[in-house]
Length: 154
Length: 93
Image (tube, rainbow over the protein chains, first blue to last red):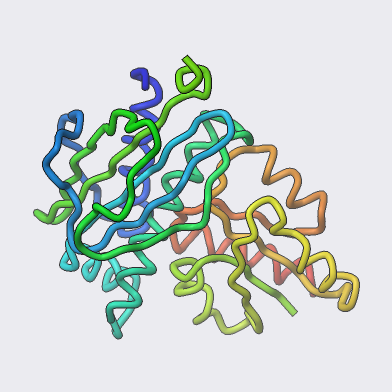
């Protein structure tokens, strides 16, 4: 991923928190994911195909998701609502990326899982860029793993 | 009737609106428009607003060409949603 592509996802996550909650988030310096698992309580995954291939993950603690839902006026916050929200964030940020990549940046419906991330492994093990996000002193991560088909073929 | 289609978080804001009488939750990828084409055929007076994460202009244009009256890209503010709902209802009256 080049600098412009990284910026697409940073702006996407900042836009999400700003517009949905009205309270800005802070993005810290992105880094390449190592062997250490990054998954927090809930993770939403969007598969990407077409012009790019890979996946976009949004992972968060329950506390952050609960506060986002509360900011939306939700009074009954249960596990299903938290799972729905984490998938929604991943979906929104991935879908917004089509402004940059165009219509051939195809996204799947969100897959949501709790806890360990071992369940999902991308073919070819592409590099995963971790974008750390802080909102209301709570932490979440956007993890982007994209490659162009030409890179995969090579 | 005004119909708003979108995901749950969009619905959270839409569902309390006093003049939206129906809503649907679909994610059909590139086939998103199919149920709506049929609905518009059966009830041509229906007003349709699509709420989507897909931020490219081509998809928004396609939505309008297939019959959507409003296309709102997530994430949106409450004001933007209210404005879109206002257009939807006003032009459907």
